[in-house]
Image (cartoon, rainbow, N blue to C red; front, side):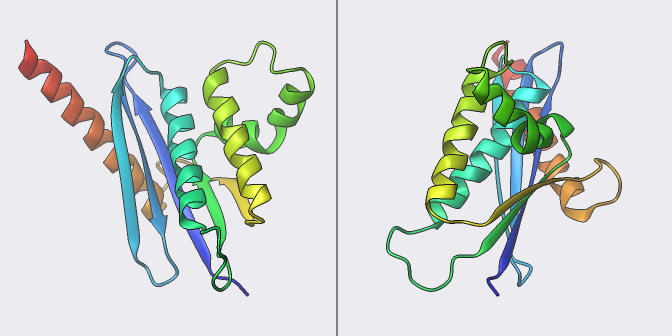
Length: 162
């Protein structure tokens, strides 16, 4: 059975400043953690949740070499955003059938759809699941802290520009 790599994602944004950040943590079977994050201006919380998952998908794709050497691990993306999880697992199919009409955050959803297609073409087993946020899940909490720290760092750098 292939190993399972779990990737926890989170996004955060402040509605007044529109500063935000995304983060993900890849957790390997041996407990090794590989965190990633970035901060942006002019964003919403949902955009940052979507960016976190898109970056996690790109991470999975980049880890899968074209020349297969050994078994490819299974992946599980875990998000506390029902919007993102439902969008990927359920709504995306209907959105595609309706030619993506009236879908908010369309550029991000199209990029996610393309990345999911690449993952399917690479025959990578991927599940996207939901977890309740701020409910004691170690890696969800850690991911949230990383995203908030990135957001705060951007906020401080902008305050220093004034």
